[in-house]
Each structure stands twice: as structure tokens, then as C-alpha cells.
Length: 262
Image (cartoon, rainbow, N blue to C red; front, side, top):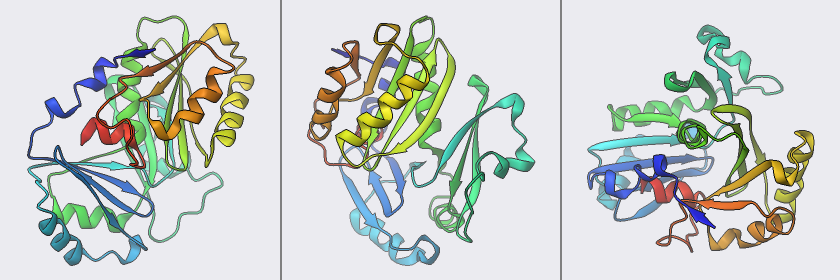
């Protein structure tokens, strides 16, 4: 079953101008997305990133850049209720078991409308380069980009909803009951069996019986067909939110995000 995620749909191409540029920050480089094309700029070491060749590459690609949106996917993130968040000690929420190196820093997005703060790890070198290249860019973490519309979609629904966002090497889980976020986490995955193991581990830990929750994949893509089939063998209340047709066969590391902001 395919259904529309209306709050995210308004972020699609029809609402992005031809002068918009979205930059997805991965651990190994940047994916530049416009309405016309997507291209990748590899980076071996963020601490040694050189602004000049990057700037020249952007010009060579003829990437429009009147409105620039930066989406962080390279670091860990966690969600903290606003009333529990202390901005002067932001690192407290994410440093448990994590030692930041000299090219990492703790950043955060405040989502005032949803009383949540997304705390994440980013690179000061990357932050500096893009601030110089695009002084007026808007920056946020992937979790922030997804959290607000998923909360909006869940509003008024009493049945629990488990949202699954699949991407290269990882998957993100959001468990909602109404607008209340019960769980958020990101897991590493490299094949369908690994994904299914972690997914069903979470459903067991939260006592989610098949009849008690709806499972919603963000988009439907050929590269994750085995993942969908594995879930549907055990759970029959599965939907695909806002599944695109134009990039169903996309090889992009984050196809759902590519479709939304490219």
C-alpha cells in the first residue's frame, strides 16, 4: 500500500525553486542536489578539506546556489525534550561512550514547534568551509528534517506507528503514538538480515505485537526490495509513505532524501 506523507510532499521539487541547492553531508563526502541533477564530491579527510578546489568544482558543475540547505548525515544524533535540554552542556547528551576528536564538535537544532532538540556531532572544518562558501545557508541534521513531519503525520492517530528510513549503511527508527515520540535510534545495517534482526529486536523490547502498530517505510526503492519482503513475511500492516516513481531505481545513498530536496 502506498500513501502520501503530505507534510513532506510540500518539500518536493514543486516547492523548491530552480535556484535551490541541497547539500547532503556524508562521512565520505558531499552530495549536491538540485532540481536538475545530483552529483557527489568525495572527501577523504574532513580536517584537511580545501575550500578552493571545492569552490572550483561547484562552479564547474554549474550548481545553482541562491538558496542552500545543508543536511548533516555524517554524525550521531539524539533527541532531547526541550525542557530537559541545557545548551551550555549540549555535549552531555551525546558524549556517553563517545570521544570527540579534534575535527568534531557537538551541534544542535532546536525544534520549537515540537518541543524537541536534536543534538548531533558535526565537523567544524566542514562548518567553516560552507559558511564561507554560502554565508546564508540553512543547516540541520537529518533527524531534524524527518522528526517534525513524522510527528505531524502521526497527529490524531492512537495506534502506534513505527517509521523506518533506510539509507546506505544505516537505518533510522522513529516510534510514535500520536505526536509523542516513544523511540528514536539509528542502527548500522549492511544487508537485509542485519536490518531485520535489529528491527524485530526493537519490536520485542517495546512489546509491539503485530496488531498494535503500523510500520511505515519512507519511500519504496528497488535496492531495498529484499528488506520490504522480509518485513512483510512477519508483519502485514506495512505502508510506503510518499513512494516516488521517478527515482524508484535510485542508487543514491539516501534515496528518500534525494527525492525530497533534489
